[in-house]
Image (cartoon, rainbow, N blue to C red; front, side):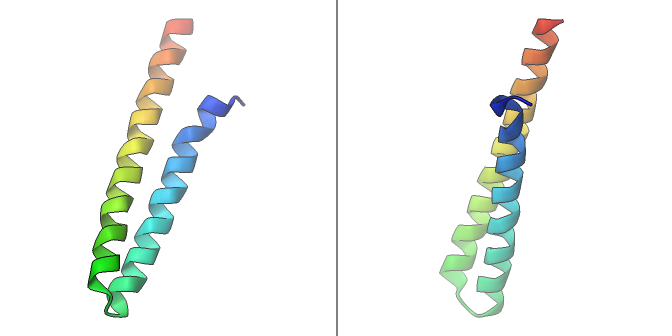
Length: 63
């Protein structure tokens, strides 16, 4: 497995961690930290989708 193929997984794990930290922060009353983590979660998951699209395009060009 190439390093390029790992990026979607890295982005997904980072997004999931951001989500859980954000939920915890919101549950404990830290609104600012929670919102920042939720925005980070959305950014990470959009990065994951973009990395998956790039990987799919690269693989299609190879064939």
